[in-house]
Length: 378
Image (tube, rainbow, N blue to C red; front, side, top):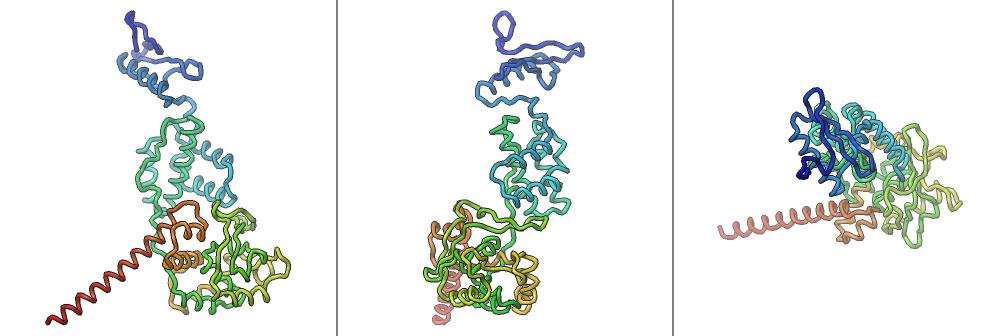
């Protein structure tokens, strides 16, 4: 703003030899800053200073020079310094950054990122054949990195990741087994040591990493419960590491149906060591159970083919267990506790799916009633 004698109260403007106008202004940091661009007219420069003053008053101003750090460098540092990231998450983020984020945006200064640029980057990923699911993961990583740039490091004033629906993976509907199919799949396992694994994973709604990390002391046969307190993660390099569960709610105690207790007892007697910290499920040679070894030794693909089931992944056993739990009429809180989720979102999905299925049954019954009524009138 200028006062009556023509001098500005905030900042100053000078005309350059080129005829364009440059601004200089004091920042909240006590330093004098020079505008990152020049202006064609003094009026444009004056307007820019007024906007900068307003941003400082509202607390939205960011130092444009700090925004010059390249996104690739900033994101790499973000991954290294982010507290609480599990080894597998670090691997995933690093892969997403190197494979999908850095090639398109890595050389762009953080302060130059715009929503339009992010939108074009995402569209290019999809055009190159990257799945919607992977593109969503890459977008969520970019959004998280830039949120830190806004809220903690004050490199930019707002997050340019504002594309509606870009974070949705839109994964296809996963197959669900019937109770009879779960027991049939368990019986078809080529190695008997995996039968209890199938049943416990399904009916206790366990993740792969959770079930292979179980110790003898985690299973209470009399109380019919299984305690989840850690998970085993297989890193890309092949190392197996013990880590906390996926979420804070992941540490939980889950009740198991009495129908699978005899198979579980049989497994503990035949395949599990007698000491309290003995791992319940191990490979043939007594080593940690790996996904590839399990599928090969259990003849997973062959069993599914014999059953006529297509596209079933091991994780779908947990999905089946969650669905069965929801169909039992469990409350939202009970579902969250059983599944080991902090948020309501996942549990609500199963509740909604159960309501939808129930509504379809009611609609079918209604159609049958109407049909029989019409037949009676004729």
